[in-house]
Amino acid sequence: MRILVVGGGGREHALTWMCARSGRADVLFAAPGNAGIAEHATIWDIAATDAQALARAVRKHQIDLVIIGPDAALEAGVADACAAAGALVFGPTRAAARIESSKSFAKQLMDDARIPTARWVAGTSADRQSLLDFARARQGKVAVKADGLALGKGVTVCQSVSAAENALASCFDDHRHGPAGDVVIVEELLTGRELSAFAICDGAHARLLPLARDYKRAFDGDQGPNTGGMGSYCPPMGVAADALIDSVTADIITPCLTALRERGTPFRGCLYAGLMLTAAGPRVLEFNARFGDPEAQVLMPLIESSQLFDLVIAAARGELEADGRVTACAAGVTVVAACRDYPASATYGAEIDLPSELPESAVIFQAGTTRDGDGTLRTSGGRVLAVSATGADLAAARSSAYDIIARVRFDGMRYRHDIAAP
Image (tube, rainbow, N blue to C red; front, side, top):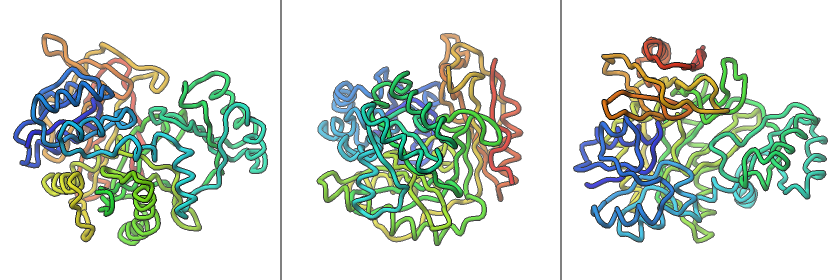
């Protein structure tokens, strides 16, 4: 098959790596890619959100399958354009991707479909008082969320009314998230353990992948601002995974697919449910319309590549068999190396020194990287790369991941030290 992976981050490196290892790809392309992706695929200098340019390239190069990574590409209608160009597409249409691009749409769909989630209100700057009243009724223990896409940084967890007031001001007055924050969701703060569930979907059926956990805060101990993700691991500790997967499929994923299909927008691609395991059971924090980052980096090495690729192509064709489990071959830990000031800013041009050799059980997925004309690897983003290691158990995987990342070097590099800590 002739395959195009759309995107240029660590998630897309993991997807390209999976395709290359599956044995199903005759030719691989990526747009816009990065230095790591270039080791597996021919790079096109086309922005991930340029739907029409990508569609023209799909026709020209006779692409059979397009796999879309980023949320912004889905919101830009890349799936629609590439499907119209004649390719199979793994990634939802723009209309179906509203499950991620509009949190108010997703929350209303959850209420309509009786999918368990937190109580919430939504509004614009004109509704600020009612939003604050909702927060005040909960002693300020709320999450304030930009309605639109905000690069994974649109959520502020508040523990006081003043914090909620500041979070609203950040959206409405400071325009911290641009147009994405013109509408804001305020929802009750749920407590429990967070998990990530990923379902391969063909519009009607779904197959859940192994559960994972990610770490959004910038610093150890879940301190600091929210980021796009600083690490992840699988399987999650202290969870009866098989029973939870059955529950999530029946109570969350299937009702969501049904609701989208009944609205005339069937969902084909990877549906992500961010979950909070509360005392009353799992509750949905958010839906995403694509693989998570960095969860993709921990899951890809744990699932046999040809099996995962076959699920992707079956979903794109609308021919997914819902029966059976997708199992992980071992345990995995992913640790992200970011620049010093991430998420406030990124680093460009710092030389990156990688270990000369890696064990077979480990891989470095690149995100914010580029190469000079002389081949020197340099930083070009906030999250630069992720070390993913597998092992017989989490302790072994964690030890390997941290041993390797300690041998990565670039100016201003930092990473969390408590990913998958017992």
